[in-house]
Every structure is written in C-alpha cells, then in structure tokens.
Image (tube, rainbow, N blue to C red; front, side, top):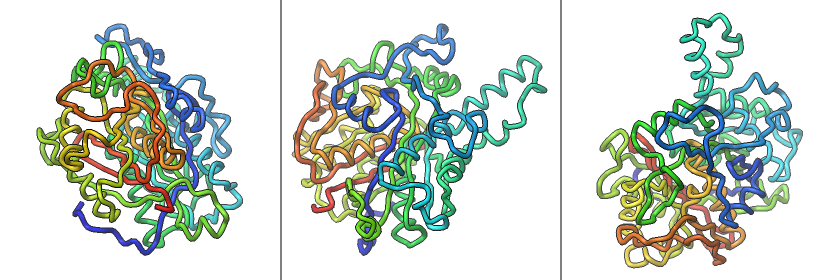
Length: 413
C-alpha cells in the first residue's frame, strides 16, 4: 500500500474485545496471564504427534462452544468458526451491546484466517483413506469452506451488513481490522466486528514440521538460542465503530485505530526479504497513514515467531523505521506464551495493543535468557512492564510476503 495518509475526517475506535487463546477462553483472563508471563504451550494433545521431531503445540483446552452458540449447534460449525463466534460474542458484550442493540443492516463482519477449517479436510482425508466416504456427514459442505468462519459470526450476531473473510495467512487478523476500518470510514457500516481465527490441525502442524520450523522445547523470540516457532490456535475479535457513534451511545473507548499499512515482499512464498524491506514498508505506511512520527510509538507488538531468520529480519525492519530509538522502544512477542495462532495471531495481538494503550502495561517476551546481538532491541524480557503507551504498533507478517501493520493510540493523544 502506498504510504499516504488515510482520510482522517472520521475517527474509528475500539470499544470491545473478545478472545479465546491457549491461556484462557476469554480476553480478561488471557490478558491477566499474558501480563503474568504464563505459558499456554505444551505437548500436543489433539492428535498423535509421536512421529514428529517436535511435539509442542499451543492448543485451547477446556473450551465449550455450546456456551457461546445461540443460532447454531456445535456440530454445525468447524472448530475455527466455534472459536470465532465465542470471541465475537465476548467482544460485543464487552462493548456494552446486546444483539437487540445491533441495527441489522448496519453491522458488518471482517474475519481473517490462515487455514480456514482444516480439521474438516482431515476428516475427509481420513474417511477417504479408510474407504468410508459414505460416513461423511451432510453438514460437511456447511462447515468446510473458509468463508464459513465469517458467515457463522454474522449469523450468530445477526449482522446483515458487509461480511468478508480474508485468508491472508498469518497477517489476516490485521488485514481484517484494516478492511473494517475502511468500511466504517466509507459509511458502509455503523459497527464492525473484526478479527481472526484458526484451529489447531494436523495439516498445519505437518507443514511447519516439514519446514523444520517448530521449536523442540519452547518458543524464545529474539533470544540468541531460539530454535523455532510453536503452532497454535485461537481467535480474537474487536468491535470497531466511529468515535461519534461510540460517544452517542456512551460507550467506553479503549483505543483509536490510527491507521494501517500493507505491503508485499514479492520475494518468496515462505521467506521474507533478506533486508526486511516489506515489513519496514508496512510500518512506514502505517505511520504515514496515521499522521504519527515513530517517536510517538510507545510499544511495538512484534510478529516475533521465534525462528532465527524471522526475528533477525524483523529487527532490521524496526531499526530502519525507528533509527537510533530502535533500542529503546519496547518490542515484545506474546507468541512466546501462546505460540503462533496463525490467522488469529495479529487479531489477538491487536487486542493486546488496545489494552496496552488503555492500561499502560506491556506484556513480556518470556524465555528470553541470552540477548542476540542480531536482535538488538528492548524485548521486555520475562516480566511485564508498566509504562505509558500513547500509541502501539501491531506487526504481522505472513507467507506469500504479506505484511500488515496497524497502529492503535489513545483517543486523547
């Protein structure tokens, strides 16, 4: 995306948050545990991982989809859709809204994903290999398509406005927020529910295992001895509305969406540009669109997967954008605690940015033991930090070279 300032005549704010993460089925408890430096990473339990060289995963345990479903039965939705609906319902409630308060035709949904509903594909493959396709239930075609995630959220909320599913891999949550931001600016909706969701799956796990990207013991973003990422699952949703709409209904405002920047490396399907060019351009575009100088960013939520290459290239991008201040701006990765939740990752991290802005608390990067000279950043090692955050930058990078940065700031900033 060109680094041009977006129309600032209409201010867009975040008034509600919801999440299901490997730490908790709920935003408040997930946030509490993130600040405490707790880890939701452990041995894979949803399938037999004994033949993989690494057996770590970041799965959601104890989640009861029936508790958040009103218009669907759990068996009518895939796992990712169930997670997305739970996050969306929590976000709407957190925004002080009930279903009856939502003007049907003026509420939209934008969700992002990496894999859609991969568990449905696994079921099909298993039945096919077993010669038992006749056992495939009639609901498969309802659950399988990736657009089912956004459609399920819309149906559960009674949202009759624009509905879109953005499958831009691990940057998809930020893409969805950007899409919702534009929809509100252009008057296409009064309120948007935006976020991302992905389910833990054997398919995704196998792909990252074949790349040799999964950490053998723990996730250590930016640490000198980091050995890889940890696949995970989850969902997050944010309620976005115009500031005028929020003020008219007396809503609590957590943060303002100041602007976003998108770019593509156009370099390689899975590898980033060796100089971090695409990520840097996304950050620069977000700053230009927001009308903010890099000096006003008080926190950077890093993509921070924990792979040797990704963390080094993200460091190069941060150094290019922040210059001599790169060593002083707090930069942390919550993937050290909840793994890489794929299409949900930047949505969860966006929610964290909103809370960092609202509360002045920054979550840590855990498992950070030995600084890496190639990652010469303030990574908020191991312990939460209290500090005023005027604006927070949320970075997300994905396969295909997709890069997306969204900036959140205090409304009074």
